[in-house]
Image (cartoon, rainbow, N blue to C red; front, side, top):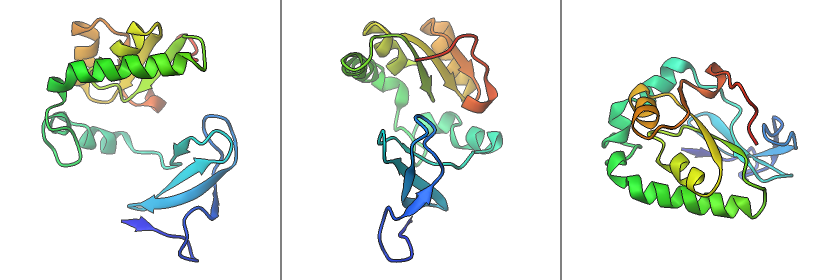
Length: 159
């Protein structure tokens, strides 16, 4: 359910600073009690809500990737499309920033991350689902950590 501000409008309340650039954010709408904000500087959209590890594990279990409501119908069957999409995103991003080290948060089995790498980026991923993270590491040979963004420590910075 989307909640409007007191005046029935979107985007009128101040929100926490943008986690990417530190710019001023504006709450655009709320979903299930979580405010979704938009940065006025870089236009990144974010929520300031921190999910508990148990909540993340329950949401992104194996059924999320195989037909669970709100997830994928069959994530693994879309591997080639996801690789292609990652390569396209990598090429577009390269027009604005020279390829460097990219962090893919919620990288699942790593298909999009693999596409970014084919476009010249060095990828590192984080994925809360152990089965998906293992696939990315063991089958695709990617640098993927199992956990949440707040639970991992990277040995090198990302661009």
